[in-house]
Length: 312
Image (cartoon, rainbow, N blue to C red):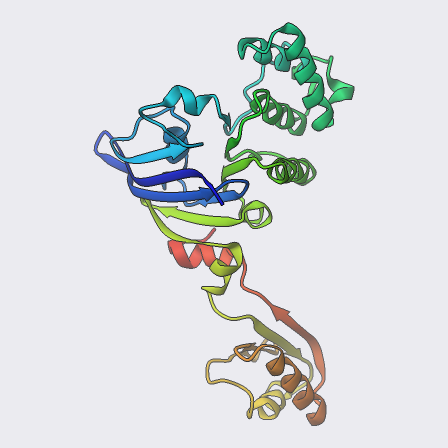
């Protein structure tokens, strides 16, 4: 696969603060890279440099095959950028917003109107197309903002916390719109504070902390870095925990966790399905009364907390 975004050793310093300290990134064409990190980690600074809004102090970056410092005008012709807040004019209608952008991009008045109509239909905004944007809901504004980024049919899209402040339904609608774009070959670099958003959208995730990439991989790879899946067993009745431990003793590893007050036992599943079957059989033979028996997987929240040393 071709590389749509490549960054090597990006550095940026602001008034004594090292915002970026050697960031390396690579995003394959037609995929989504989720950029995660605590507040102030350098995510937005990275996006601003890759989208030519900010010049790096050091390092090298190419977007859509062009150097962001030497050929910024070529980069800008091939990218779209949606920031944390919808950058649309509330006094204009949705159609007028998109048409104006098309005219400014030299599509011509007829071409701009045609492109506006296509995008309004794509983002399910036809019914509100001729209403002032100030009457739109937050989710509608964000969809219009995303549509505005696509007027010029960019091959690379930067989304900087695009669903901040949206309700769950609007957020899911925007996620589905992004997935459709990627299916059509658009490359996306996404920064987000919502870990479930990265889990849903990203093919790969890079975690940035203190201006450096401290972990990278697929969502599943990062989750597995926390540890194996675990079997959580909750039992009922006086002495049931001791009975369960006795039944499990031949299969239980040394690092199982027990909470006598809640009546729970957590068993790491290093052996996979075999451990589950063995535990169920042992408990049934011992006649232990089981209230809950479920496999739990590490989440991206768990991985984020481990990697950055703080809660997500």
